[in-house]
Length: 85
Image 1 (cartoon, one colour):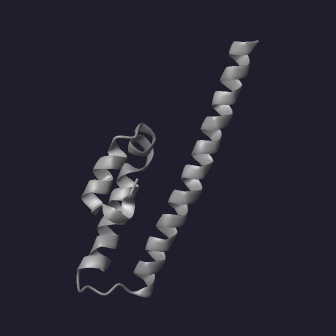
Image 2 (cartoon, rainbow, N blue to C red; image 1 turned 120 degrees about the vertical axis):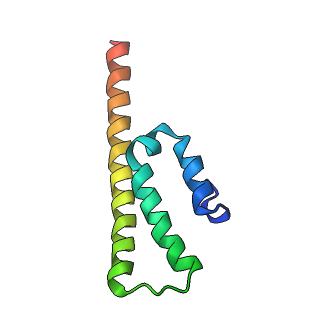
């Protein structure tokens, strides 16, 4: 997705079209985008704790999606082997 060119709302609509992200991460991404947009577009200042929370949310998303995608690939490979046997 061209995330940098999309607004937060547009990005969430695009993500919602993908079953994997809609089923597992729509709420997490929505919260992250709302908090990020507040930082980007308002005069509200975010403190160190808020920045740490955003960073941890992003790290969790990256690690969890990687793990789920790897598990899905392993399951697909196992199913393909079973069909071939």
